[in-house]
Image (cartoon, rainbow, N blue to C red):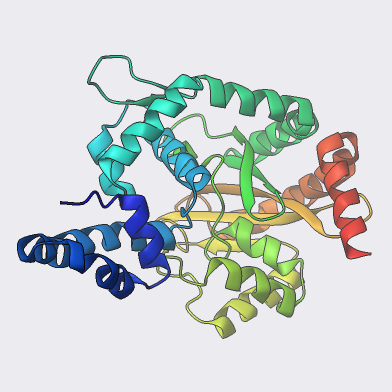
Length: 328
């Protein structure tokens, strides 16, 4: 029987050329081999290819980052078979990719034949970059002050050119119920069902906001949504208009049930395109309408302080110059 690699079938399936592949090979296959190839191999391999294509992981680099992101969700380690299953990739290909990542120092396998884990190399690179960007230096004092005032979780997000990402936080809740960011920290923010996302969108015109939403999707399949999240475009636009008038967004039971949050956009020093958001989040039993109203002014003041301080970050300042140059 000929050797039909996953890559070969994947290339053909992406081009919708499985019939041509069969036509070109059936003359060299026995009837039993042709039956096996048609009824078993193609459905299995095409399924994996479709998942890869839907995930945007067609290339080797895309698959490598998909594996890295999955490992980041499992600090205790995860097996080859589980990685392959979750990503819809062949175990043999995943194993080769993991070996390459181990050789490069980004992945480790503490025990022979054991699970795979991220090494400390990639987090160290990220921390080093974040430190040199100046973002923690300019933001942490303001986040700490707002957390002390609100006695809740305070977070800052930054727009990286593609996604809105949580990059900093301060925990003001010291006892009882509290909301901890967990694995959300460093993740892309859903735009239509989080206070940060809604505050970000409200800083743009409706047309511009809908462009961002269309890129991410109103109802993303991997995004948790609370019962109060906007369900239609008209509902979303109504929420954005209320946010603009108020000066900050309010989100109760839209992202996680039982949680409430509020956020304000952080603009660049020249009050141009927003560079991120600052938010307060906590259990809705404490974050009542009255409490949210009390925190509105401190939140907006924090957003203005972060806007003024952003000029000290070479990374943010450089991003603004690049955006300005691209616009002109």
